[in-house]
Image 1 (cartoon, one colour):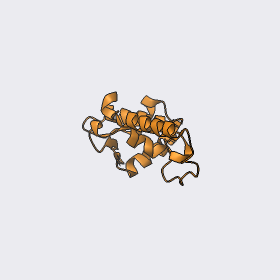
Image 2 (image 1 turned 45 degrees about the vertical axis):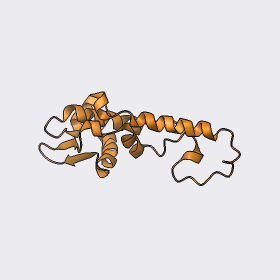
Image 3 (image 1 turned 90 degrees about the vertical axis):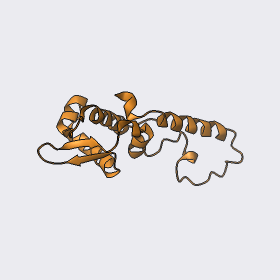
Image 4 (image 1 turned 30 degrees about the vertical axis):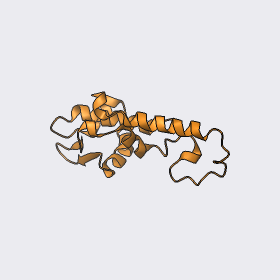
Length: 132
């Protein structure tokens, strides 16, 4: 498993907005400048975050993006689940994967299930507030 660039940048963007929103909206160009990202790339990262209710955005003067909840209410698993196809360590544990015909014979399934649990628990153990 390897977290994509999009996933890493989505976390950086969420932390940046949480850090800088105060009582208003954070302009996209300001996030891009602070994070060293192009506006074009940022325009690909923000829509899934707004579509799924993690951020709210408004256009025009004074516009930008802000969190919809308190930073403590965002787990890293929630952000990464929007950017990564799957965080499972092996294909047979991916969400919606067909049952593996070898599951009953597999000597390593307990290992992979344990690793999957460790990853999920770790991502659930961190919130945006931990990075502020």
